[in-house]
Image (cartoon, rainbow, N blue to C red):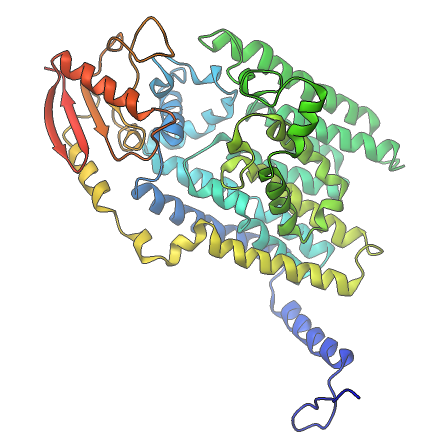
Length: 508
């Protein structure tokens, strides 16, 4: 016979009703104390904007960013700010960045950079764009499910590993797409079709593959109009958006990017199926590439876990299909791992799907299961906050400048403003706002794949090389950088200083 444990001082055995009563009182207290939809949405947006900004600034001061990628984007925005084409020397001599990826939306940052010419301008702008995704999702969850769900969804979005990873490291153009997809997915969930299209149509100006995501928006509208049986869903609008998205991406990839790229082709064909270094060409290889290696399953788990595995049941997840499709088929292993910025655009769609399921599928999620789902989401959010870069805020070492970075800054101060520099990857972001920077491994020779035999066509005035730079494979293999350093010495470059692994040369 089972023994019963009685509550102290009551003589009663606590059962499900008593526990549910206590939970109900806690939820009622939260509902009365949490602010309204707008106030809570803006509060969480502001909090995460500050958190992202501080973490990004701290990590940049520690020298954790590189010429690839924040240096590249700063050179492009700097050119826009002065009315020039986005020529980026870090990608190669005279390289127009619109031949690499199609992101003319970067021009919107030019006025801010003209006033505040610094890499911190890009980092703070990125923090604002990413944090803005919290507002529509929190507001929708508040109105559709309740204030407790809104708090969980807003914090889950803000602390999601995909967005935090993007906010903490370098700068990337997809920061513009995150709020667009947040507002667009919420509009789709609320059946505001034209608003969804207007929010997501500018994706065509963010990156060439996001036209396929815009096409997925159109496909969702078509699905609602046909299979969903919704008379308010405009079938013609959905079809038009699908065509616009597909044609837009095709024109950018097949026409615009090759027209500007020095090679006359899209630079990333080699990472797509059937090309060298990609998944392979046959149907069997393509199918295997979707599920192998196992790192892809980890990515799927990491995408489903923040929304308690129930958010993925929403048809809104159709918007994730194009991005996951090309990532899983590509041969670049960085696309599969959950530690880079590539998943940032998926997070607002996932949480929109979560709210969609919580609010519309009462048959799928009765009240007890909804509470458990919200509890799991909150717990996973807490784990992500502890594991991903937001934890830098409570690490004392994150607030200190490493000694090696302090030495690097002292060495780089010897280079005058407006001069030309060939630099190691991690040192480049400290120079891009005031000099013209290229990479130290760039040179000339008959075979681009072999070690260079000569200096660049327009040799820089200064060369700075950091032998401790951890990016020893991409973009500059360490043996190539050392080889170029030797060539510069052979051509008369004089050593100005060598300290803590950093060598500074000057052209006589």
